[in-house]
Image (tube, rainbow, N blue to C red):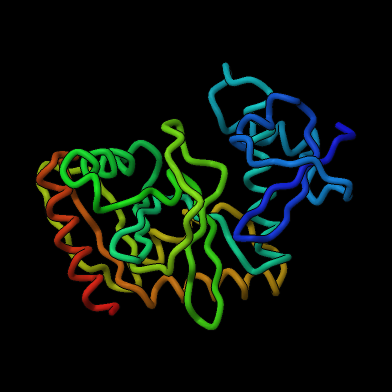
Length: 242
């Protein structure tokens, strides 16, 4: 636990100390040894709280990883004004598009469908937890080491184009979401807590930046036709943001 390792998130240094050596594997080799003091160390209480929210058979290193994700989100928000956002981030026509929903709702399915249909059109920025950074009122989407069970990601960043909220259904349809509905769906996808006034204001600023971009709800069957519908919608969104 004495060793300190550094990762770069949205270009910012974040230094970690680990209680379990295997936890470093969740950073996908994006760590380097550091001489500085750790910014983030999960306490036994942090790990116990994380363990209570995951299946019991998961090892302690996974519980530490989940605790570190929450602590990292809080650290980025407080120190750099950034935030981790639970979503798949796709690069399409120069813009980053966030596909978000609770786990198991088909975010990765849409990406895999797209690769089958038009593999040359998109690149995965982050498969699970991109980092959002707002500068001069515009949000940039950055990769992170955490790309979900498929481990598909890149080292690319791009300006935000829009957001798609996924919902499983018996038909395929997509519609723009009014702000009130979008807020309710987006807030739970921030991987952080905000307790101080400064943190709350920063998080509200990030949320406002998201809401200035198009937000759609895609009800879908997870088939190729739903991905075609999504592609046509994003293409229109690209044209609007040019």
